[in-house]
Amino acid sequence: MKRSFYLLLLLVPVMMMSCQKEISLETGALPGDSTMTPPGTSNCQLSDFLEYDQVSGLNTYAYISTFNAEHKLVNLDVLDSSSGAMYGSFPFSYPAGKIQVDPQQYFVTGTDGKITEFHGYQDPENKLGSKVTAKYTYNAGGQLALKTLSFDSIPNMVALQYKFTYTGGNLVKQDVEFNKQGVFVRFKTADLTYDASKTVKSFINLYGGCPELIAFQTGITAGLNNVNPITKAVVSDVNFLSGNTLTV
Image 1: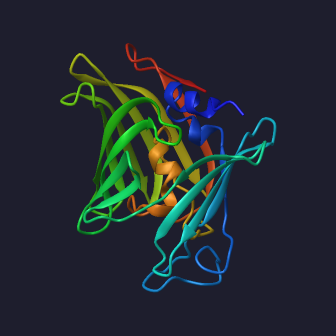
Image 2: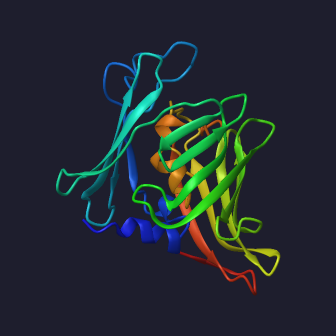
Image 3: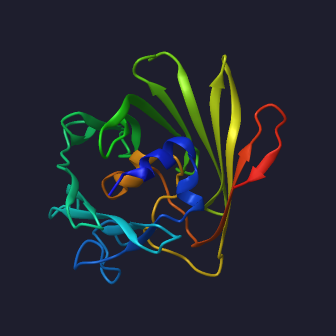
Protein backbone atom coordinates (compact mmCIF):
# COMPACT_ATOMS: atom_id res chain seq x y z
CA MET A 1 0.00 0.00 0.00
CA LYS A 2 1.32 3.43 -0.92
CA ARG A 3 2.07 5.50 2.16
CA SER A 4 -0.06 8.48 1.05
CA PHE A 5 -0.84 9.24 4.69
CA TYR A 6 2.70 10.60 4.98
CA LEU A 7 1.94 13.20 2.30
CA LEU A 8 -1.25 14.22 4.07
CA LEU A 9 0.74 14.90 7.22
CA LEU A 10 3.14 17.12 5.34
CA LEU A 11 0.67 18.94 3.12
CA VAL A 12 -2.19 19.20 5.59
CA PRO A 13 -0.70 19.26 9.08
CA VAL A 14 -4.01 18.84 10.92
CA MET A 15 -5.63 16.33 8.55
CA MET A 16 -5.12 13.74 11.26
CA MET A 17 -7.95 15.31 13.18
CA SER A 18 -10.35 16.08 10.35
CA CYS A 19 -10.19 12.72 8.59
CA GLN A 20 -10.52 10.67 11.80
CA LYS A 21 -7.79 8.30 10.63
CA GLU A 22 -7.63 6.40 13.90
CA ILE A 23 -9.70 4.42 16.34
CA SER A 24 -8.40 2.92 19.55
CA LEU A 25 -8.62 -0.74 20.48
CA GLU A 26 -7.89 -1.59 24.11
CA THR A 27 -6.93 -5.26 24.01
CA GLY A 28 -5.10 -7.89 25.98
CA ALA A 29 -4.91 -8.74 29.66
CA LEU A 30 -2.45 -6.06 30.72
CA PRO A 31 -1.78 -3.45 29.63
CA GLY A 32 -4.72 -2.35 27.53
CA ASP A 33 -7.53 -4.20 29.27
CA SER A 34 -9.94 -1.52 30.52
CA THR A 35 -10.80 -3.70 33.53
CA MET A 36 -7.23 -3.63 34.85
CA THR A 37 -5.13 -0.67 35.96
CA PRO A 38 -1.32 -0.60 35.88
CA PRO A 39 0.21 0.08 39.31
CA GLY A 40 0.53 3.76 40.20
CA THR A 41 -1.87 5.02 37.53
CA SER A 42 -5.55 5.92 37.45
CA ASN A 43 -6.16 4.93 33.83
CA CYS A 44 -5.80 1.88 31.68
CA GLN A 45 -2.95 1.81 29.16
CA LEU A 46 -3.54 2.19 25.43
CA SER A 47 -2.17 -0.89 23.69
CA ASP A 48 -3.15 -1.31 20.02
CA PHE A 49 -4.92 0.95 17.57
CA LEU A 50 -5.88 1.04 13.89
CA GLU A 51 -5.59 3.74 11.28
CA TYR A 52 -8.39 3.68 8.72
CA ASP A 53 -9.65 5.63 5.75
CA GLN A 54 -13.00 7.20 6.59
CA VAL A 55 -14.04 7.47 2.92
CA SER A 56 -13.52 3.81 2.00
CA GLY A 57 -13.92 2.41 5.51
CA LEU A 58 -10.85 0.24 4.95
CA ASN A 59 -8.13 -0.26 7.54
CA THR A 60 -4.75 1.06 6.43
CA TYR A 61 -2.24 0.48 9.24
CA ALA A 62 -2.28 -1.25 12.60
CA TYR A 63 -0.04 -0.30 15.54
CA ILE A 64 0.68 -3.23 17.84
CA SER A 65 2.47 -2.61 21.14
CA THR A 66 4.38 -5.10 23.30
CA PHE A 67 5.11 -4.22 26.94
CA ASN A 68 7.38 -5.65 29.60
CA ALA A 69 6.49 -6.48 33.21
CA GLU A 70 7.09 -2.84 34.20
CA HIS A 71 4.48 -1.73 31.64
CA LYS A 72 7.11 -0.10 29.43
CA LEU A 73 6.81 -0.39 25.66
CA VAL A 74 9.57 -2.66 24.34
CA ASN A 75 8.44 -3.08 20.74
CA LEU A 76 6.05 -1.34 18.38
CA ASP A 77 5.06 -3.12 15.16
CA VAL A 78 3.35 -1.24 12.34
CA LEU A 79 1.44 -3.55 9.99
CA ASP A 80 0.10 -2.81 6.52
CA SER A 81 -3.53 -3.84 6.94
CA SER A 82 -4.10 -4.39 3.22
CA SER A 83 -1.46 -7.11 2.97
CA GLY A 84 -0.73 -8.07 6.56
CA ALA A 85 2.95 -7.35 5.90
CA MET A 86 5.21 -5.70 8.45
CA TYR A 87 5.63 -2.03 7.58
CA GLY A 88 8.01 -1.16 10.40
CA SER A 89 9.22 -2.42 13.75
CA PHE A 90 10.64 -0.25 16.52
CA PRO A 91 12.60 -1.83 19.41
CA PHE A 92 12.18 0.68 22.23
CA SER A 93 14.91 1.06 24.86
CA TYR A 94 15.45 3.47 27.72
CA PRO A 95 18.96 4.87 28.15
CA ALA A 96 19.29 7.57 30.81
CA GLY A 97 17.15 10.60 29.93
CA LYS A 98 16.00 9.14 26.62
CA ILE A 99 13.47 6.92 24.92
CA GLN A 100 15.30 5.28 22.02
CA VAL A 101 12.84 4.43 19.25
CA ASP A 102 15.41 2.85 16.92
CA PRO A 103 19.15 3.35 16.35
CA GLN A 104 18.53 6.64 14.51
CA GLN A 105 15.64 8.21 16.39
CA TYR A 106 14.95 9.08 20.02
CA PHE A 107 13.04 11.26 22.46
CA VAL A 108 14.63 13.24 25.29
CA THR A 109 12.72 13.07 28.57
CA GLY A 110 12.54 15.39 31.53
CA THR A 111 12.77 14.46 35.20
CA ASP A 112 8.98 14.04 35.28
CA GLY A 113 9.07 11.53 32.42
CA LYS A 114 7.44 13.77 29.85
CA ILE A 115 9.14 14.09 26.48
CA THR A 116 10.94 17.39 25.85
CA GLU A 117 12.54 16.75 22.43
CA PHE A 118 12.37 14.40 19.45
CA HIS A 119 15.33 13.75 17.15
CA GLY A 120 14.56 11.80 14.00
CA TYR A 121 12.83 11.91 10.65
CA GLN A 122 9.93 14.13 9.69
CA ASP A 123 8.12 10.88 8.86
CA PRO A 124 9.56 8.67 11.63
CA GLU A 125 7.76 5.52 10.52
CA ASN A 126 9.45 5.02 7.16
CA LYS A 127 12.38 7.42 7.43
CA LEU A 128 11.48 9.52 4.42
CA GLY A 129 12.35 13.16 4.11
CA SER A 130 14.46 15.38 6.29
CA LYS A 131 15.88 14.88 9.76
CA VAL A 132 14.22 17.18 12.27
CA THR A 133 14.32 18.25 15.89
CA ALA A 134 11.04 18.86 17.71
CA LYS A 135 10.83 20.52 21.12
CA TYR A 136 7.83 20.38 23.47
CA THR A 137 6.65 22.88 26.09
CA TYR A 138 3.92 22.21 28.68
CA ASN A 139 1.51 24.51 30.49
CA ALA A 140 1.06 24.72 34.26
CA GLY A 141 -1.57 21.99 34.08
CA GLY A 142 0.85 19.52 32.52
CA GLN A 143 -0.69 19.64 29.03
CA LEU A 144 1.28 20.03 25.81
CA ALA A 145 1.09 23.74 24.93
CA LEU A 146 3.69 24.21 22.18
CA LYS A 147 5.69 22.14 19.73
CA THR A 148 8.43 23.70 17.63
CA LEU A 149 10.02 22.00 14.63
CA SER A 150 13.46 22.69 13.17
CA PHE A 151 15.17 20.98 10.25
CA ASP A 152 18.59 19.63 11.11
CA SER A 153 19.93 21.18 7.90
CA ILE A 154 19.06 24.61 9.38
CA PRO A 155 19.41 23.86 13.10
CA ASN A 156 19.14 27.43 14.42
CA MET A 157 15.78 28.27 12.80
CA VAL A 158 12.36 27.12 13.96
CA ALA A 159 10.44 26.38 10.76
CA LEU A 160 7.04 25.44 12.21
CA GLN A 161 5.28 25.80 15.51
CA TYR A 162 2.14 24.10 16.79
CA LYS A 163 0.06 25.82 19.49
CA PHE A 164 -2.44 23.91 21.64
CA THR A 165 -5.28 25.52 23.64
CA TYR A 166 -7.31 23.72 26.34
CA THR A 167 -10.63 24.22 28.08
CA GLY A 168 -12.01 21.97 30.81
CA GLY A 169 -9.19 19.48 30.42
CA ASN A 170 -9.67 19.06 26.65
CA LEU A 171 -7.70 20.24 23.63
CA VAL A 172 -10.12 22.65 21.98
CA LYS A 173 -7.93 24.45 19.47
CA GLN A 174 -4.74 23.84 17.52
CA ASP A 175 -2.96 26.43 15.39
CA VAL A 176 -0.09 25.67 13.02
CA GLU A 177 2.25 28.51 12.05
CA PHE A 178 5.22 28.72 9.70
CA ASN A 179 8.24 30.97 9.86
CA LYS A 180 7.85 33.69 7.22
CA GLN A 181 11.07 35.69 7.25
CA GLY A 182 11.30 35.65 11.03
CA VAL A 183 7.60 36.16 11.75
CA PHE A 184 5.30 33.23 12.55
CA VAL A 185 2.16 33.20 10.40
CA ARG A 186 -0.83 30.94 11.02
CA PHE A 187 -1.86 28.77 8.06
CA LYS A 188 -3.88 25.96 9.67
CA THR A 189 -6.32 25.88 12.55
CA ALA A 190 -8.55 23.23 14.10
CA ASP A 191 -11.43 23.61 16.56
CA LEU A 192 -12.50 20.54 18.55
CA THR A 193 -15.62 19.89 20.65
CA TYR A 194 -16.30 17.12 23.18
CA ASP A 195 -19.09 15.25 24.96
CA ALA A 196 -18.79 16.49 28.54
CA SER A 197 -21.20 13.82 29.78
CA LYS A 198 -18.66 11.05 29.22
CA THR A 199 -15.06 10.47 30.29
CA VAL A 200 -12.38 8.41 28.56
CA LYS A 201 -9.31 6.47 29.69
CA SER A 202 -6.02 6.75 27.81
CA PHE A 203 -7.63 8.03 24.63
CA ILE A 204 -5.60 8.45 21.45
CA ASN A 205 -3.55 11.62 21.00
CA LEU A 206 -5.20 14.27 18.85
CA TYR A 207 -2.12 16.30 17.96
CA GLY A 208 -2.59 16.83 14.22
CA GLY A 209 0.50 17.08 12.06
CA CYS A 210 2.67 15.49 14.77
CA PRO A 211 3.42 12.02 13.37
CA GLU A 212 5.96 11.16 16.06
CA LEU A 213 3.35 11.74 18.78
CA ILE A 214 0.72 9.68 16.96
CA ALA A 215 2.89 6.72 15.96
CA PHE A 216 4.78 6.33 19.24
CA GLN A 217 2.06 7.39 21.67
CA THR A 218 1.94 4.05 23.52
CA GLY A 219 5.58 4.48 24.57
CA ILE A 220 5.82 8.17 25.46
CA THR A 221 4.25 10.69 27.82
CA ALA A 222 3.34 13.96 26.12
CA GLY A 223 1.39 15.56 28.92
CA LEU A 224 -2.16 15.03 30.16
CA ASN A 225 -4.62 13.85 27.55
CA ASN A 226 -8.27 14.82 27.01
CA VAL A 227 -10.80 13.87 29.66
CA ASN A 228 -13.88 13.67 27.39
CA PRO A 229 -14.52 11.98 24.02
CA ILE A 230 -14.32 14.16 20.94
CA THR A 231 -17.55 14.76 19.00
CA LYS A 232 -16.45 17.15 16.26
CA ALA A 233 -13.32 18.63 14.70
CA VAL A 234 -13.47 21.53 12.27
CA VAL A 235 -10.24 22.09 10.33
CA SER A 236 -9.65 25.31 8.42
CA ASP A 237 -7.04 26.70 6.07
CA VAL A 238 -5.95 30.20 6.96
CA ASN A 239 -5.01 32.82 4.39
CA PHE A 240 -1.80 34.08 5.97
CA LEU A 241 -2.15 37.42 4.19
CA SER A 242 -5.75 38.26 5.14
CA GLY A 243 -6.24 36.02 8.16
CA ASN A 244 -9.49 34.66 6.70
CA THR A 245 -10.28 30.98 7.23
CA LEU A 246 -11.70 28.36 4.84
CA THR A 247 -13.10 25.17 6.37
CA VAL A 248 -11.58 22.03 4.90
